View 1: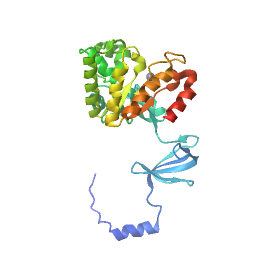
View 2: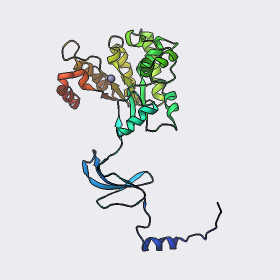
View 3: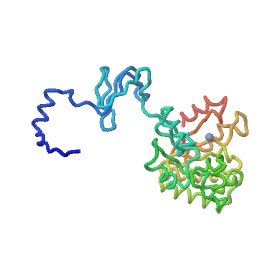
View 4: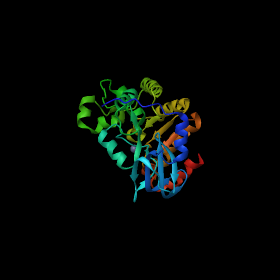
Length: 289
Ligand SMILES: [Zn+2]
């Protein structure tokens, strides 16, 4: 390619050009003719969207011009969805599926990641989606009960269900069945604390997978830390039942009471799976809280 020296364009010249032809500068990208939906504002109509420098700068009833144009006729144009309950954030093929569902931000919050820094490092610069994970209390428990556990995925749930990773990581199911001693609870708590400092988005507490292993003494310590750092716990509740003594509502109250005491937040994942027919009452309880 030949290098050609052009005379510099003067500011006044640019101003003149703009005055003469205000539409000469097209947007970076326009998405025309789509049904534009914004759940936050309730906006819902066929419209045209302009994007400049990666940001939406105009939503118009008139078709817009861009360097790149997408005709979205017959399709919905919406903000990327956030999925707070993904177990497959770190898998490339599952990221593709997330994107096809409109999910641009899948988050591993319920089971989370451990070690958090490794998990983030593996995705940095090569993820097709936004990504994030909570601190995996289950992953940490697995390590405390079995020091030979060394995960390469940082995702304990993968180490449970993927035969190759199960072998590779040395996973054992002790965390799901064993009650921790006072000394082990102290160590688990210290590790959760350290992982929050590494950038975990709160604490993943799938108590329902270890309902006979994790004591309230232990979960209360996680939630004390959540309050200390002003982050949330993400709950798969301890019980799945409508009946006493193992009502799903009780399993939510268990965690909700610690939020009342220590602060932090609580996101109840798939509540209906735990509270069944009592779900409307459980939702009201959360609203009241
Ligand atoms: Zn769950």
